[in-house]
Length: 135
Image 1 (cartoon, one colour):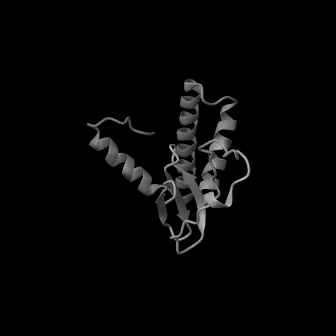
Image 2 (tube, one colour):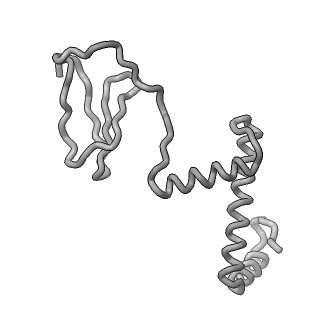
């Protein structure tokens, strides 16, 4: 049994710590898994209450687990902006080469006002260039 979370429950916390120390590794894994699923269910309910998610609770948990696995593996992708639309052929005089990174860039972005360009590189660098006409 878990103790209620109140600021004035030091005795309760001591009993809980002793109980956790006495549990076997398998019991600990089960307890932690149940706590994680409970937190994920709470988060899914909260999102549904705000109207940002639909579907069954198990679908929300599955989506959360999949996102967590992708993040852990470094494969999670989230679209943050609209795709760039090309207006037409680019004249060679308007092409600029921006130098700086030691290792290959892995992502690039423009600021909302298109005055700066950013690049994230394999070495962990984030570079920023000021984009000026003719500069």
